[in-house]
Image 1: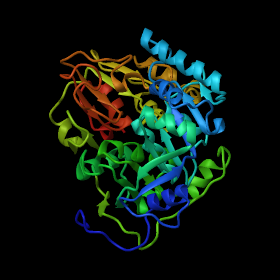
Image 2 (image 1 turned 60 degrees about the horizontal axis):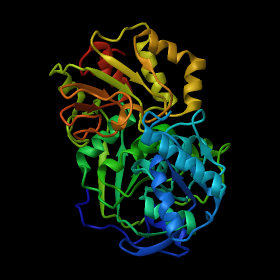
Image 3 (image 1 turned 90 degrees about the vertical axis):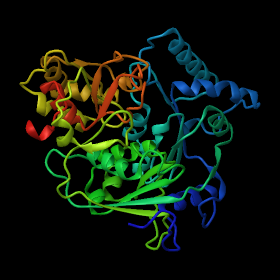
Amino acid sequence: MTPPGEATGHGSTLAEKVLARAAGLDRVVPGQIVDGAVDLAMMHEQGAQTVLPFHQMGAEKVWDPDRVVIALDHWVPASTEGAAVLHRILRKFAAEVGLPHFYDVGNHGICHQILAENGWVVPGDLAVGTDSHTNMLGAMGAVATGVGPTEMAAVLALGRLWLKVPPTIRVRVKGSLGRGVTAKDLVLRVLREVRTTGAQYRAVEYSGPTIEQLSMPERFTICNMTTEMGAKTGMVAPDSTTFDYLAKIAKHPMHPLQPDADARYERTIDLDVDGMPPMVACPYSPDNVRPLPEVAREHIRVDQAFLGSCTNARIEDLREGAALIRGQRIAPGVRMIVSPASTPIFEQCLREGIIETFTDAGAVFTNSSCSACFGGNMGILAPDEVCASSSNRNFPGRMGPKEARIYLMSPGAVVASAIRGEITDPRELL
């Protein structure tokens, strides 16, 4: 492992390559301030806070309506008067400035999944969104990052973003993920190493034989949780997996870039996942990570199980959960909520009988939304309750009261815990 602060090589990392392209420069270095051309801007409900500063700066038109996506995802349909007002602000703004790509109620889903499954972000892009987990789209070989409402207002008006080039932490992974061990377990293992502050304003670049074997959904999962490391973006260099995924859905031309062989990294972390067990992040931090079998021995009772979120609510995750729960019943006293990441995923679950499988077992299958993840809509916990969750954060108050305890784990582990009624190693049910 390269110690923190000890750089390698003299070439450029993937993040530096993408930002140099966005800024129209041959090369950029960490710490350099650049003015980059944005390829894709995304807003969800928080984007309603962008409308006022957009008008206050004198803007009347969006720089490129075809490069802006609005998606309702946190409160769908609106569950409070405040949410309804946010939705109305965004609908009115989209109509006034002519934004055609609006994913409204009925064609909705978690904003990051909508961008991913519709090809809105492609290799080489600089993409920004009004949500911190926009990092997920870095799995495309793009710099994807969250921005605030005022920054987004400037992006909408000018199509450009001022930012500082981040140093890059390289995470190289080798070995094979065992049966019942997933990409979620891998990123939790990385979080145990990096911690929640270890990648502040850094890019995290994943590479190595294990990463190359991951599917796009698995890459989305690991890039998604670089947010919990404090990272500016998480990235995987594009390859045949990326290109095959985007072949029929890419909305605009790709600009695939690769890191240089002698790229200069701030730190390199080498991991071997051979023999790695499932992992779990215990309360109250995503980096409080322990081997799941060790935690399972403590027989921690579960009140709620949540299979959803932008981290793990794709069709592959729901199929994994359905395969475990088919013919089983959720333990008495446990509530299980299953929320697909998008309307197309919901429809796919309907076609495959996945919805029926979960509801037959006693689960609640909801429409596609952020759902219980953020503690502002359905699935809020009581102060003394425990939730087994496939989401990305377990800070105090994340699902409601600060006393509630959230354990982060893979979809399979969530389902196994719902069946047993306590934190459970999913391999016991395979």
